[in-house]
Image 1: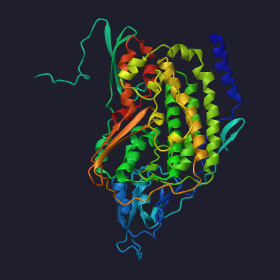
Image 2 (image 1 turned 135 degrees about the vertical axis):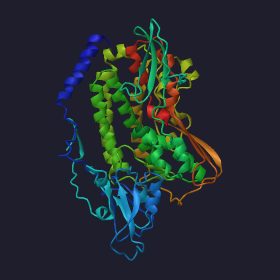
Image 3 (image 1 turned 180 degrees about the vertical axis):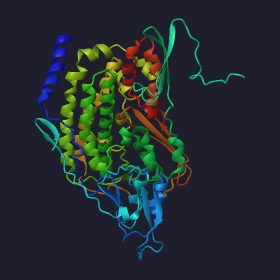
Image 4 (image 1 turned 45 degrees about the vertical axis):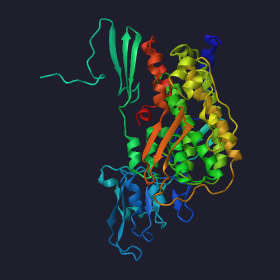
Amino acid sequence: MGTATGIIKALNSGIKHLAIKRFTLRYPEQKLKFVGDGYQFDPSTGVGIAGLKGRHMLFHDHCTGCQLCSIACEGVAEAIGMVKVPEEWKQNKKSIMPQIDYGKCVFCGLCVDACPFYALYMTNDYELSSFSKEGLIYTPAQLQVKPDVSQNSEIQISDRGATHG
Amino acid sequence: MSTPTLPPGLAIQKADERIMTLNVGPQHPGSGHMRIIVQIDGDYIVACDPDPGYVHRGEEKMAEYRNYVLNIPHLERPVIHDSCNILYPYVLGVEELLGLEVSERAKYVRVIASELNRCVYTMYWLAIYGIFLGHSTMFMWPAGDRELLIDLLEKMTGARVTHSYFIPGGIRNDLPANFEDVCLRQVNYFEKRIKEYADIFYDNPILISRTEKTGILTRENAIRLGTTGSVLRASGIDYDVRKKEPYDVYDELDFQTNVLKSGDSYARSKIPWLDMMESCRIIRDALQKMPKSGSVRVKLKPNPKGAIGSVYKRVESGRGALGCYIVSDKKAEPYRVKLSVPSFRNLIALPHLLIGEKLGNMPSVYWSLNYWPVEADR
């Protein structure tokens, strides 16, 4: 192939792209939709349930304060510490629950795999930025709150290219 | 006061009338986190000394203090864009040490995840190769099209980059509902997109004139220096671990390896692009042959202990043959984990390729070696 035809072919390929739709996610106006409500784990079968590994969610009525999540995290990120909670639960004699430092967490989800009591799951919330380091430490009371997320963009493919619809 | 003895790389070199020493890196955007010490005579390189080690993280030593499962998140850090493939040999080795049987479905899902990850890595590599050559369109297109596969991996594993998806005994979680259809649609569109790169990049006379006949690695030298992966295949040697020592279900899948004979920068940059099309074929084939249901993960005891012995496993990663050697002494933690990485083996060829080249060709020759600085340092 000659040099001139090669350059014309390359230019032509660029011109053809003028008609193709833009493949850009306009964050934060648009947010990607994820499958499910976040990564979960079923200890009876030992298999996880697919979902985004985002911010954790702690179920106070299931947590026994066994520290297995904290022990799992010691080898990974040391992000989980056990703290005292004011409420009293009958399954949690010591009244201790995990507190997660998102400045250290790597979102591997091995703490969720370690929990045998269905108490710790992950959610679709990934917007955790804060102006201070203290703001990244989530107490058991903050982890109890179900996140409010509005994520609805999905990749759509048509003849004119892929878009985030 | 006596002058301190400096390490060889740091010592001030005696100035010569003609030869000038130039440090490229370690914080230069054109080298990644490593340093290349080049000596130039005018515009021509007369000597070259790559100096890796700037981002050494001690991954192998860290692995001796964590149990077999907790090693997973940190062992994928050396190549976060290819995290499934760098975990693959470790997971295969631990399965042999612990005596775990992996289900057929988990093997197929692993193959799909590792092929998707190979494409994600290659697209990132290609984007940087484009920007090294000053071809900014080739930076934008792969960086955008990579999103199609990152979206698939996010649906599968729950994370965009560091997946922590493979685990001794299978995979962490089963595929989400309706994944097969979404995967097939996006992979088909992805394949259509990468074929369009031929017009603008690979058949572009400007690219060909810059990369053809530069940095030629002959067939003999490629074997002698112990290079691997795309560098080896670009020099005319048909070697792919997926074909030669099939692991998991690669022996049941239909694909071929791509070999080019010229051994120059152009051939080395083209092989990963051709491999991506093979990856698309593998994914389609695996989706078809995969068992539609079944268990995907063996239930592990807490702190599993390996049998006394050692195991060496290797896989074909996005850069070449990646091996992992694990020694177990019947404790919960491995006695030794050694990663044999393709980046380091390919870097050995760099001084041989650069001598006699122009300095302007250095980035294209260097990045065509499919090198990832953090992986070489580990």
